[in-house]
Every structure is written in structure tokens, then in C-alpha cells.
Length: 245
Image (cartoon, rainbow, N blue to C red; front, side):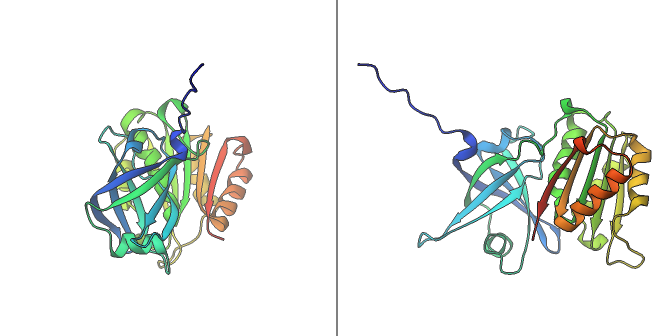
């Protein structure tokens, strides 16, 4: 009699234990969490994971978060969590989570919305608000393995004070490797939303992009897509990820 071959569940479908090792503020509403887990070296920049919390009475809450870090061999990955009104998962992270606490992660998810150095460029990124997180992972990976690839980030935030990882993005823009940051704010004095001038400025720095990633609200991604198409960027190179209603 032949024995049955065990079926191994794909890594993306399994829940993995993850331990919080570092907590740090990013903006008044966003915190960074480093988690040690088996998924830390099994993802591509741009992908996200599902996070599951389980209460003592068995109640569970779940939400998806983009990975902010690039794989670095440390055995950890970074999530940036924005505190949202009535958010069960974000509320726990922002108010109760402590170093040593454990959560469950499932993933990585989002194969088409990901980038690594061998994928090439030029690379054009555009983000609204917390949509910058997966694009930050791509830029960190570029700095690690392919700083010669031209890249530009159009980033729309409500205020400079609320722009995620702005000091790091400004340092990357000043490192002389061909990355340019095009920041706009919607609530600061003189601020504006993403427009044709911002798109033109980014394209002038990198030329015709071969990889384009847009992430943000439906409104932001729709506006950015229309502007890029009007500027002559081929639809086939644009990848989008949206959140919100």
C-alpha cells in the first residue's frame, strides 16, 4: 500500500506567529512596529500582510497592512500603523501594543504590486497619505541593491507634519543617486493636490518610466492615473493599489 504524500500549505495561506521587537513614532498618528517572524525574508517590496489579533475570549480582528521595510536579513519586517477612529486593530497597535507582544501574520500578498532591483526602471511612484508605505519599501530596496536606477516619488500628504518618513525620503533625495522627491500638501498654506505640473516635474527627472506604482485612496489613484495617461505614460506600465471607500 502506498502512503499518502503530505500536502504542504503554501506560505501565503498560513498564519505565522510574529513578535514585536521595536516600537517607534513616525508621525502623530502613525507608529512603526518591527516584528520578528518567518515571513521576514520571504516577501518583495510593495507586498502586504494580513494581521490577526485574538482576544482572551477568542474574539478575532483582522486587517491588512503594507510592509514598509525591504528584506535585510534581520529576521524582522516593519509595519507602519496609522491610528484610525474606531479601528480595532489599529487601536490596539496605537494604544496597547508593547514590545514582546505577539500577533499573527499571513502573506505575503500582492505579487503584481511589487518591485525589486532586477525588475529595472526608470521607476515612478506616486502616493497619497499612508499609501507611501509600500513605495517606501521599494525605495529602500532600490537604495540597497540598485541605486543606479532613476526613480521619482510624487507624495501628497495633508501637511508636512503628517508626511510619513519625510526625513528619510529627503535624505534619499539628497544622496546623489538619481532619486527625486516631489512633495505636495493639501492643507498647508499654499498647498495643492497632485496636478499636471507635479507629474511633469517628476517625468523630467527620470524620463519615460518603465515601472509605475500608485497607492492611495480611490480619489488619489484615479486622479494620478488620469494625469499620467495624459502625460503620455503607457497604461500597461501602471500598477495601482487603493484603499478606502
